[in-house]
Length: 361
Image (tube, rainbow, N blue to C red; front, side):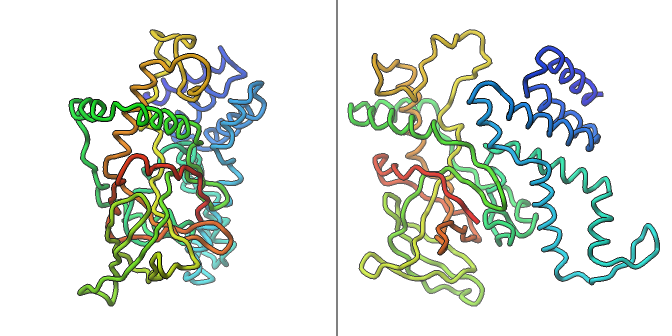
């Protein structure tokens, strides 16, 4: 009944605003929840067409955050083939009682309800492209993409929870930072981070908006379990020194003996940190809201924008969970998996300047 009611709401939205994508997005969620996967995929496809044919540029740009059903099928196909590498080339089809080859195995799976559910779920996961929680794991990287785990059991351990900051602590920290230069830096950072697009997967690559810190030194530290894991002391520009334990053998280098391959410690960008107001709140009109992206234009910066920018500065100064990335010859990066969360912290807020979007294999 819950999904039926949600579907009725979606149909009403479509009836009232047939040219909008919103009703079809709601419809996809409702149909998926009701296990009507073929219809859910159709609704998703229609939603994409509404993006592509929207009259305004901002709505058309939203299309970039999604993959099409055909692209999702390609991702699933590659994953299936990778999983079947070690499987027998001929198996017994339990439905027909006959032997089938690998193509037959895949074709049989594609006609199943499980495949349709997987396809619809894949679209739904990628649709939540701004959500980076799927990247929060420790263990071994997948061959599909280094930012995804090789085994779903990597998600069984609860994610590391960073200590939260109370409102009293927040206000004390803001007061201690009430300096003209700090406020200007905060406004500039807020504007730059607000312009970043959401994280998204496309063609087996993760396009990750982040704050990057170049690694300047990697030194191996002797440990008891060197047969399976290696511990390294790592230094990066703008960050406090830290240790990383991984199955990978890392190239050791320092400022005096630099390496050809570059490494980065990155903070994946989470848009929740900029604390945008709820645009659905009717108590605040569009005319009254000053977007921080307009800093530096004519007129004074409003106090609300300054407050949000200063709160961002305080949060960026807190410990955070980082990824270690190694640049590849083609220019993209690969994540180096760790057996523990990599927790680090900036030395000073003015060291936060490497804002970019990286392509990760």
